[in-house]
Amino acid sequence: NLRRTIYLTIMSSASYEECAHKMMKLKIKAGQGKHVIDMIIECCCQARSYLRFYGMLGDRFCKISHEYRLAFEAAFREQYELCHRLDTNKLRNCSRFFAHLLYADGLPWSVLEVIRLNEEDTTSSSRIFVKILFQELSEFFGLPKLNERLKDAYLTPHFAGVFPKENPRDTRFAINFFTSIGLGGLTDELREHLKNAPKLIMAQKRAVESSDSDSSSNSDSDSDSSSSSSSSSSSSSSSSSSS
Image 1: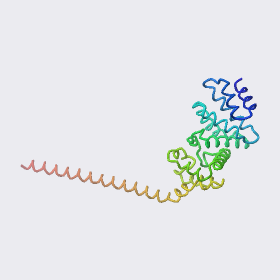
Image 2: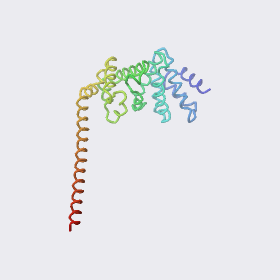
Image 3: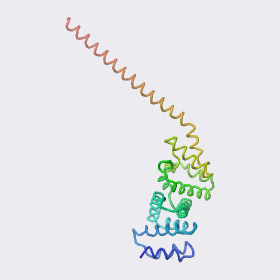
Image 4: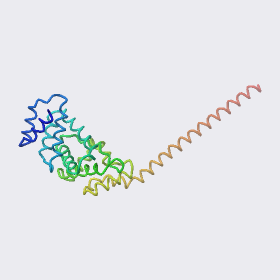
């Protein structure tokens, strides 16, 4: 049984390097990579407390091949969506594990697009997951560097759900959430956006009204032109008849 063999290999290894070396010797076939990823995550979650061993092992496999990296990306989405099934300890270990992979660039930060931080799309479990994830990232990077990463022009489209701007209610929710977990410094742009939101709404409203007004004026102008043309045509017709 492959899963059992992987489990025993993980449990009997003294270091993540030794573990990765042993597992590579198992000659895992194409398509079986998911079993490796699932067992690493499962063993990590089962531990009494988070062990960096698992984060470093996961990072090693992310960088061994593209197949493993894609499997970890899929696992992140799956674990986030099903985190309500995990108890608090497993949830904490799982979140810290993925924070390690993000910090080490084992996982692309685009995986965060699965998170939609608002009242409707989160549960108490998913909020704990996000809380631990970002607190751990803040520990790794420090708040200034984490802020810098989150404002990367290439990556920001993937963080639209984490830092929502479309709905003021969702924006307030995200601001309150990050402030409550001690990471209010990540919400400076959201606060500025919320502050300027009424002005933006009024500007958009004026632009729409102006556009409607222009359309109406053009329509009236076309109508007048058509009437004038019609009158002129009638007049010419009358003159011809008289002649």
